[in-house]
Length: 254
Image 1 (cartoon, rainbow, N blue to C red):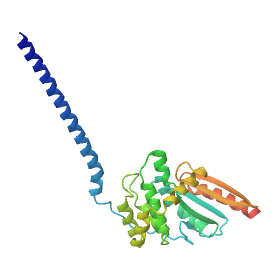
Image 2 (cartoon, rainbow, N blue to C red):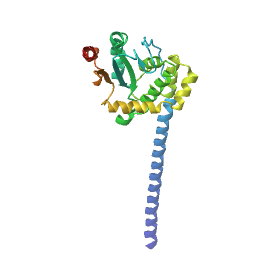
Image 3 (cartoon, rainbow, N blue to C red):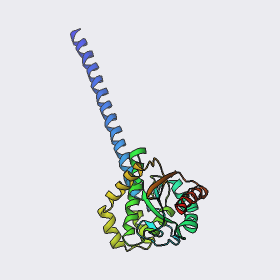
Image 4 (cartoon, rainbow, N blue to C red):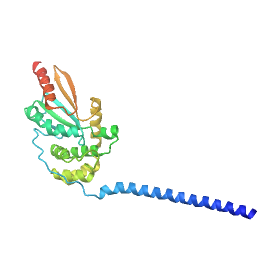
């Protein structure tokens, strides 16, 4: 009888041990599958050829100087705080910026400066680094006096938000397409030369009250007093026209 009880206890223990072994094997298997999936997710996009890069006509920009265009002595300054992954920024670039050039920048009434709010993406909505990296690239292009050429090509080659538009490899293809000297560009970009400048853009935008992209800070002086106005979002040309005409009327009345 005792031998029977012992045998049954041994059988139960063996079954328990077998179940534990199976559980461990299943757990290890699931972990292995999970690790393999993560590795695949990281490696697979890098094995894919980058999406085709297109060439565009960047247009003409009066008195281009790094990230600014227009008469440096123009009575009104517009600072755009933007992001190359932002669809509303792209809309402004395509629809409104050409009209501002035609009616206010070309005639010498406005000096226009483009600045990055790329850090806003990662710090406020948990994005990756593509916005910051594209901003680094545009400033490196400025070293070759091709800021606005790179600006146009970055917007022309955006694929969406955080989907690989501005991987390192693709940024360099865009820079080559924009006509940059690649040895000089690669040295600048790979060194992270303008990381502090991109961070400062973001901090200055926040200080100006920019809480999203695009944001436009209009500033001018009347009787020695600096005046500012913030226009938020991809507003139509008429919104800028109204603000600029009012500013010019103030300036001319002093």
